[in-house]
Image (cartoon, rainbow, N blue to C red; front, side):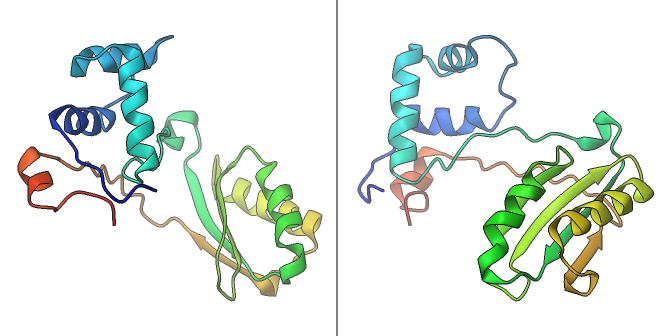
Length: 170
């Protein structure tokens, strides 16, 4: 990570534009480059610079599982012996219904989310995962979604904030 980076108006425009919907076209970066007034290769160079500086962490889709017929979800945490975390994470990640799977430095060391058609489908799926991994039910924390809130967080960057040091690595 580079500690000393100065953002200009173009960098700010890129950061703001990347928070919009990425177009589903064969060359999305070309379209985004056009919005900020750059050739595609210059946009990609700047995005790499922003990533290397730790300002741009990543770009990934946010999918609404309800649109795919998956109306139920749960967050699951597992208490695992340290030597089995990687093995069990691989099994869990093999399920297409799992959207996140991450390790925590906590009593419950592996956390993942499951989506399904309904609560019964999730219950069956979780039971299957526990059987495949050999994890006991008493080592499971199951936190079903009670109310789904869609939070659309976007950050409005402007040149004044950059000059005042509000935006930058750290």
